[in-house]
Amino acid sequence: MVTHSRAIAGPALPVAASVAYAVNCALGISVATRIVDTHSFRWVHHALFATTAALTAASAVAAVVDRRAGHALSVVGALGVLAVIPYVGTRSWRHSATATAAAPFFAAALITSRRTTQG
Image (cartoon, rainbow, N blue to C red; front, side, top):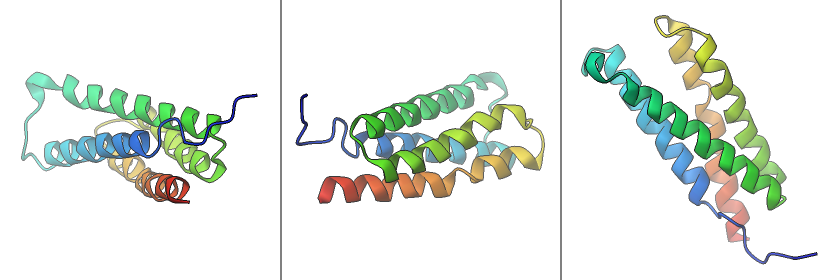
């Protein structure tokens, strides 16, 4: 059995997933408040969502491989919320409310990733 003295991804994946989530939320809010019009490039929001989901999934896999249970739970919580977003509709309050529900999980993922790499 191979033992690893260091996490395979450290905090890089949860930080990248959290940044992608924050950028996607900022874009979504700016579109909802009509600050930005993405009518001709709606795909950007979808690409950011796919990036967020992929980075979050990669972070979950890394946490499981590294046996970081607390971190894995927070990331899986974020994945659960992300899995629901495509099914709640885009033109209602439910979309933004569901997307916002992922924020505590991303915050917990950042906190737990720092704790596991510091000690």
